[in-house]
Image (tube, rainbow, N blue to C red):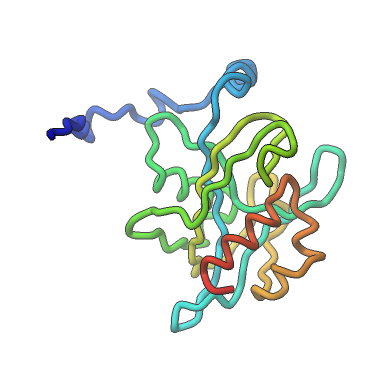
Length: 188
């Protein structure tokens, strides 16, 4: 049996960011979210020892529009025409700053896949806005982190502190469970 695959596009044929930002207006996004699952990346920044063991986990602290402080992972949509590697790097740099120096994986294979639903009970993960599929990566970071966007700070914790019940309870929509599963896959 023969299976045909599409030819890879010539890199010169890809739209430039200015020609196709891959961004939707609020109205367009609301329309799409109501009809299609959206692809996201989520990243857990970590610091490693010389043997590659996780010694620290970076968790973002954010404030909701209601003024509630929550913990979060680095997360964001994958734009049209953007590779997973590009999306992962863009969101890491957006949230941690340009001096974080993430060590991008040679082959971006997610540690976990989470499926968020707008209605509770379908899965452990809830996002009131949409049905979303999130690819979760653990990314070593070697530089200094200066949170940007809407992150207030990056808290570096030992894996034990990050997995403490009090810390996991600070996450919204099942992301505490997702952090636990992700770190367990890496021996924590």
